[in-house]
Image (tube, rainbow, N blue to C red; front, side, top):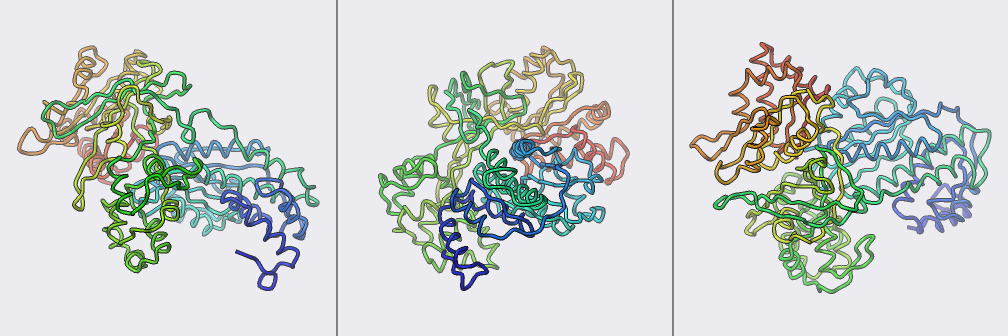
Length: 623
């Protein structure tokens, strides 16, 4: 894109400077500069030396006129996060540290710990929030979200704000919660100082770019409030630049540790319709630490058969070099195996493919008004279906492959206590294989683990902290654990930890699966813990062992009186597993038990559970 002074508000010399600068910028630098300039409207523009190209940026600052100073605000900032898995919290803390480095007094808090009636006193507000399920706020953001969208929300009178949204483009309502916060803060009179950034599952670069834009905007505010523009390379702008590259953690999501497989066992008995792997990995030498309740992220590889089918369907050459992000160029087969997502279709991908190929059928499917048809098409289909279904064979790999997003890591609840198994981490992973649209489909990571993760193999991993799923600090507190199938994984970690620490509080586990004889995961360990008193009681539900299906929620209702008594004693309830069905049914069962046994109305029972959530006595790790 070339800027001409004849159709823009810039002089010829300014347009020439912009045309030199803009083509050199990365996406992160464009975000940074956008926020910086947005904040400087009505104020002075100070010189910046990074992340933009140094000489062009300095010349641009000289060419743009200074403006009158604006009144200074106290150097205070509030960073609120809403997080289901911990990513938003991590990024919020990172932003807080960078703000502190600029001399700001920073309050960082989970949304459910923030008192909404103090919002009017906030000087600057920064929101980092993920979207959960189908466009819903995370559990710890729900209360603040409802408050902000209620009539009780105050007018914000120009309060500076910015929003970072985390999400997954495979969901229809991508980053919806962040979009809602951004829109609502503006409606209440807030002043957006940096553009909202919507992050996909590979969020690190985009998140860092957003933070850069926030810091640049604040530097612009400070410059505008000062007597005059700061000299090039000095003052707040230079300080913002110095904070633009925070120290990297040695092993993290963006730099995973290659953990050696120690053991890989099938937990299901002969004749079971299921295959559940118990995976043991070595963390020796990694420096990685975790707590019960945390998750392990795995970067998997796509199924070799699917990769070959895709190459054949598209008419590509397996050895052709294609772009692969930070990896530079890779042979196509390798790039499709371990770098790109090829098993899920998203609306943005289909829109870009329609634009690239000019396919009238694809354009029709992605047109406004076709949302339901698009949802139905995407469900259960992959890239091979797209290539074959829309006759895209022959599209050059070098132009098509960059449209794909990076393969996202898969998160699994950790099934071990670090005190019981030092330098190890254990997982419980059920292999996913199913038929859809005339082809066999494989769960990417579960099949990778089940078929190709032999002892000695190294797997790229990182620790995903989950402070929303933690054992109570008081070891005497009773706990109730509800985890059918692989949802029982974190409770093996919980009980292993309590055994090692000698915790004395009562423990109750509700577990379910299909058949007692073949699907009772970790049966020997539960029985040992029951015998030794680490596990106080256990109720099981094997759905296929009788004519009428029985699930964990049915066992809960059968034990309603005692379960309610535990709640009244202050027990903490933990739920892990499938969100769409199991977690919904368990929540309904809890409300029923509280209503019946407590003699409460439906509204009062719902409020009882809501209060438990606020007190961290009702914690969920659902997916």
